[in-house]
Image (cartoon, rainbow, N blue to C red; front, side):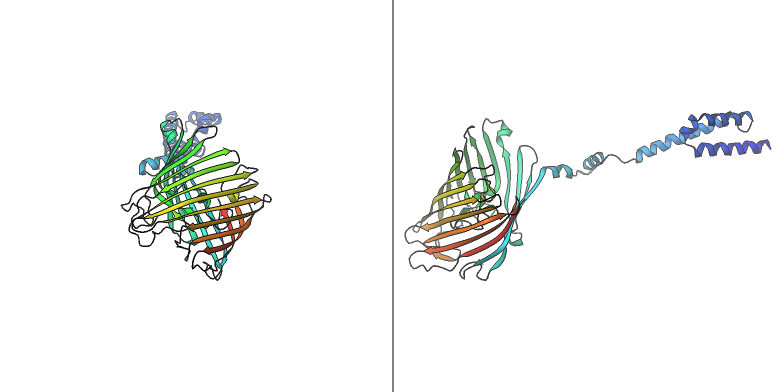
Length: 434
């Protein structure tokens, strides 16, 4: 009977010790009293109690070690451990340095029979996505995708900007740009798209071009700094590498004469391009004159801008909060050919924008491009000695970044034996930027 009570006491003790947490067992005074009574009655010995306590301590220590080992580490520690183990890049850190911007335009175009849209057409003439990555506080990598008309067309920008002033501790502002970028020539080229321009169309002699090379830019002076940029690029189009031709040069100076008036002067020299097309486009003209085996292009342009009741947002014109913007540009070009007559001429425009309110604005432009003597060239499939365009339109700002624009272009061709084409254009587009 006594042995039975001892065995029963052991079972009761085990039940108490396993059903109650070990910490509670050793801290509970009532439990200690029960143990003493059981020992006094001879149901269980003091040695057995100590052995049981030692076993529980051992199990407790083992359980805590297991829990500590299996407990999830903080996310940052786990990501860091994975990076160290697999060499992966911290995506969260990348996201904080990566920025996305873009612009978009779509609408309806209708032209005369000799124009690009004789039956009227819905178009998406502008769709760009630009990714900017800042690996540090000195460099910036830019990659821009061209998705015009809903189709991936090209990577038109791919370059790295470096703050040389910060890198070398220079006393003046100086930045470098290496890769494929827009040539900094003239002013219209900085906003020659239906989203940022005041009108859906550009001037008839629009100058533009993207090329591969190196550009240096900066400012001289502090109170009224003189802006400058110079670049050396490949010069020829249709290729991502030089075609064994001379390098081209682009230079530009800009200055605020006083607060509302800004002026700039640009110069371009392609060097010899052999028979390749030029990267700098004049009114869409990039091809060599006739069947020339060797040619070069030289051009210069002067620009001026006046902001009436100047605002804080100045560029591009369509999103400016100045009360009015008035601009003019005049340029000259010389396409030299070794075995034929030169193709020379001039181009320019006068345009203006006036904000009737925060929502509505009106805009207009008169532009031309003309070739000297009796030289003719084909622009947009029409040959003439001189091309003129008169544009009128306006916009309604639905929001700060979205505008509905309308415009009408009167196109005129002049020159001996030139018959004016039916190519006037009406445009209605919705544009947005982010």
